[in-house]
Image (cartoon, rainbow, N blue to C red; front, side, top):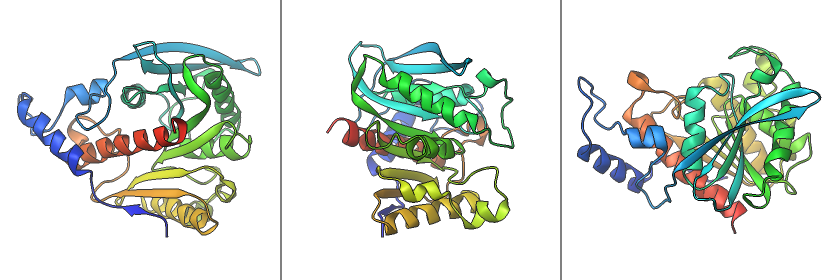
Length: 290
């Protein structure tokens, strides 16, 4: 069976508690562990680099459609590994952009397309527009053409429904191995969103069986049943065919642990999100730096 990790990183937990104890507790708040430096700027206290991050707004074109995108990278002018970041149903909103920024603070050039705005789509669409897959694939071209990245390949990082779009870019657009070295998915949706309920619960997208790149899945054990079941079946199926998949499951954590904010956020969410960022950083560096 593929590796299953269910415990939090002790170093990350210890560092988080230490940082929280030295910080000023927000007035009238029980969130004694809250850390603005982490949430707003991605500062971590484990054995990871911390970089100041610069944000660039660009637009690229596909079939006459302008696709806005956010590019986040360290400010020091050095070259870094490349990540194509894919949003879920919520779109590239403020919370999503904070995740992109926290990722770039680890030492990556991250391109995150806003796949809805260019096509005048509202946030949280029910149906999936297959044109978005092509728009994302074009974003990979734009990322790989940059002169500030290390090497000539990128890794994919996706959130929720962005997992299906990332899967299509890797497999349907035939970008894996040559252009894409790895894929990390936060609680990924691994089925065509336009298919009916039986497909969402009992099947995963056939494209998973065609993956040739290493995959990491990060998910809470309290994730929605249909999402957790489908992702687990996909991981089992991929592993049974000789694929490389690492399943990271966090106890006591539900969906959206890296996006839930304010009074909705828990200590367990923060432990999971920091541990996930640590593991993703090492995973991407392993495949793009080594």
